[in-house]
Length: 139
Image (tube, rainbow, N blue to C red; front, side, top):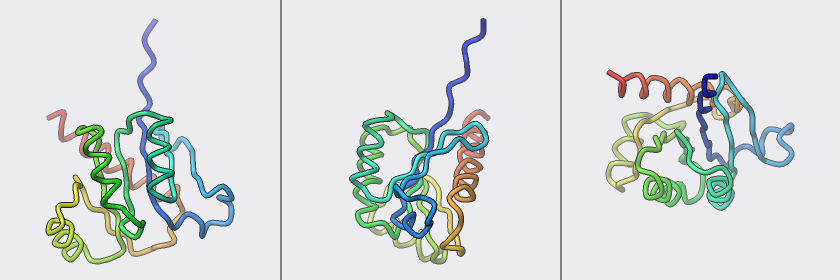
């Protein structure tokens, strides 16, 4: 009997989830394309979710979230192999320059200009990044 493949896990930290009326608990948990997606609306909830779930393969952090840098550093210190994707609605050049100046730990940037994108669409973008990075690592 073959062992079941371990499901990939992503945590998405974004304080803007409250704008989606259907997320009454301000949380999102769903399996999308065989990847388990969790959300948190603030750093405390994100840390709590990390303790509950364990390690994540990728953490997406929207830069508008208070203390985003604190959670990025917490994530990096907790597990060096966890990929960190910084998300922002600002220009890629400006964000990259700013993050590099403040030593914000990240592996990839994702700039979105639709700030009110459905969580499932953001999840798909994060899954795509995870797949691309894992494909590069296997080369």
